[in-house]
Amino acid sequence: MAYYFPEGSKFYFSKTFAAAKTISAITNASPAVATSTAHGYVDGDEILLTSGWEDATDTVFRVDQLTADTFEIEGLNSSNLNFFPAGSGAGEARKVSTWVEIPQVLGISTSGGDARFTTISPLAKRNDINVPTGFNAMSINVTLGHDPANANYQQMLDISRTLEKVAFKMVLSGGAVAYGYGYTSVSEAPQLNRNQANQVNAAITLLGRFMSYAV
Image (tube, rainbow, N blue to C red; front, side):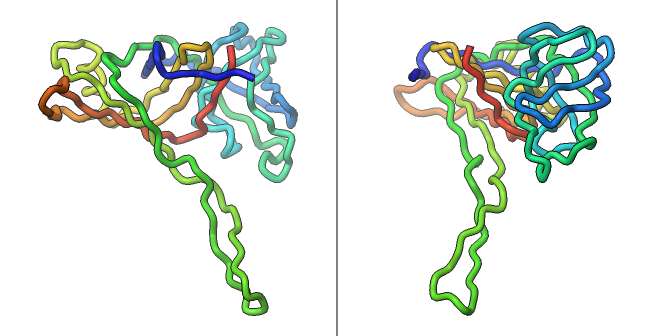
């Protein structure tokens, strides 16, 4: 059992990816194994996966290299054929090339990502039934110290204005690592409060899953 704390954590984004590698097949297993001829990946590489499977697309995973043509997708359990139909997981992988640190982070919070339910009210029953139907959209909200001269902040503003998608990485001080992928939106006007550093807000709205790993 391990506990992690926010103090000492660092946060990164990346819009830079290596050339796509074609994935011809992904096994139904835990962890799933991808076939990609001459992929060139090594253990611990971070990839953005695009797949025919909803729960395996637009998500950043770590890989475990097996052979020159195969690698494990760490954390992906594709053994349930109802959610991961056999033969339909092919797609592509792009290695995350460069991480840029998100500057002067003062606080971070998440919203969404919780289970979504539909309430069913059968006439033959006096009690309603909540049926799980998926998960609500997830956002990661970051509060930054406002520094218009910071190059990383300026890069985030450019990405925000042009609606580019980025990978997100969170490294906790205890060693855990988490990833996401989606749009980033950054405010330009700072919030000014007495006895506080000027602040701006940044939000990353995820398109795929939020994946966490222990080191």
